[in-house]
Image (tube, rainbow, N blue to C red):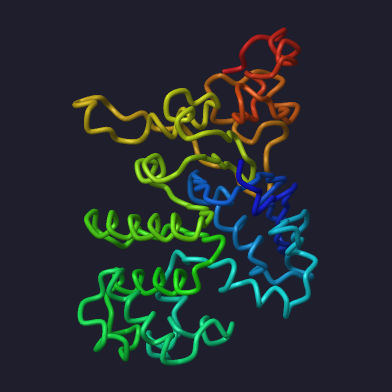
Length: 335
């Protein structure tokens, strides 16, 4: 079995505001092996993006924000590294494709310079070699006339083209770990397949580990081997993607799948998850999904559920699966 390249332990990220403390990530733990592709899925506001930007050290901590826990990357805790050492890892051994390319690209720099900057900064190539690699990457991500567009500025590209530039930047240094936050949102289906194929090709060549953050369960199921379902800063379910698709266990995971359109189902009506996600400044006592759960028991509202292993490497954060749930069933279902 391949080695663990990243292990996140009890990650907690909080933002302090005048009206309260926002618990954006609340006790997330997982391990990622070399060559593995992990999907993190969930509704907007569930803590997916904050969890990975915390791991990357991109949350400015201090009076307004705190990040606690451990993020062990290749034997080193990223949270304990000095700033210079962390900068040597970011953009080199770990790369990230950000969700919004317009705010992630420097509007005053030509895109070619932005693509080759990590290679030059980390001394992985001289300028001539870096330029050749940059042109090759622009061609591979589907940028037409790469030699001419190499000297263009971000405002001269469409949203989809800027997203492709971001992907080229992330792949330039052949990282050991690639974090992709909604990397294909602005792309049409044909280009989406092309980009995912390129990332998979790079993954096989480098034995690269990938964390894919997405709302698209169809993309996740075809691209990823494991999945984490997040809700209100918590991991609700974690396991092999094949198990999740065939037999989702947590009521929230079931709701996500039932609300996803499937062409083969014909006229089958989609089932929406009732209610709204909780306010992260005022999370409910017990299970955060309890107010929206049709299978909620009294114990769900009182006490946070334990993590239960339902099968090999398949864990669920739910009282319904716990051997201790009999304590809650004494009072029956609360609806």
